[in-house]
Length: 134
Image (cartoon, rainbow, N blue to C red; front, side):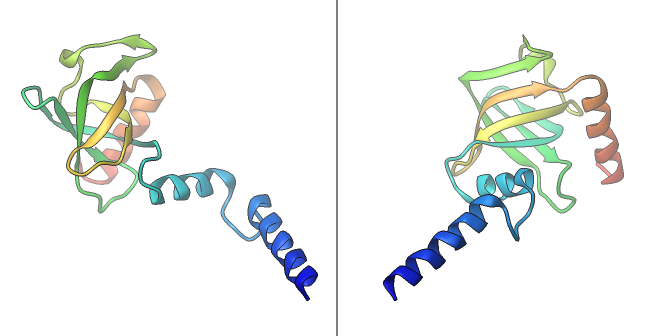
């Protein structure tokens, strides 16, 4: 009986790890990342507010129509980049399409990287924002 339980457990584990009966690996990874606090997350959206005094930005996500804007705290360790090059606060303004990498936190999320999107990525985010009425 114990051997049967172990075999069934091993089969169930293999099915879960192998992806049988679940979303694709990209979707499954996003589900796990968003469900487990402390894991890195990414969000694409449009900057709706820049508060230089409080060192934070507000971003309206383009991935969920009903999502509220989210405040991200920026620290001295936060990397601000565009096309792999370091940028400054002056490159962040309302309407700027960005991808924010962050860790969930109480209050403003703690951003460790803000990428100012350019080219096709920026165009895609802007189009999504327009469709959502942002």
